[in-house]
Amino acid sequence: MHVPWKAGTAVDTGPVLVSLTSYTADRHVDLPGIYRAALGLRRAWPQMDGAVGLLLWSQPAARRAGSVSVWRSTEDLMGFVRWAPHLEVMRRYRERGSLVSESWHSEGRDPSQLWREAKLRLARPGSAG
Image 1 (cartoon, one colour):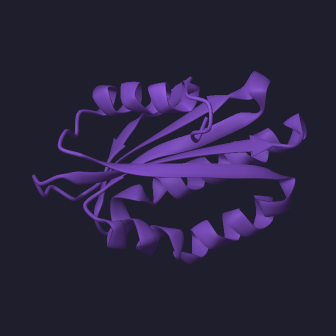
Image 2: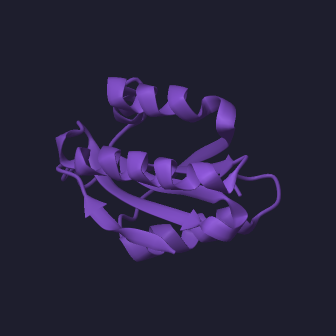
């Protein structure tokens, strides 16, 4: 299941950086808080420099949730990673589960194609899945 694509304000037509994250909570009881935190970060998405788009996904039965975020550049992604509200969420849930991420460059920006690629990566052993 996933939350619909949310476009950012970056309209550059060049290649993009795609970041896939997968968080596995140790306990089901933490999932609602994780979900609310992710939606809070999503609300601020249009304000993020270099943000092209964002898709949130979850697999509640597996205690997993994550994102597919698309950026103009690595620098833009790192700006988000260092953003105070993001750091607060990461600190709050750091000891309550495990996070895996991976990234790749893409020429395409079609949300459905990027989601298909992310699902393939999530299903692959040893990846963010």
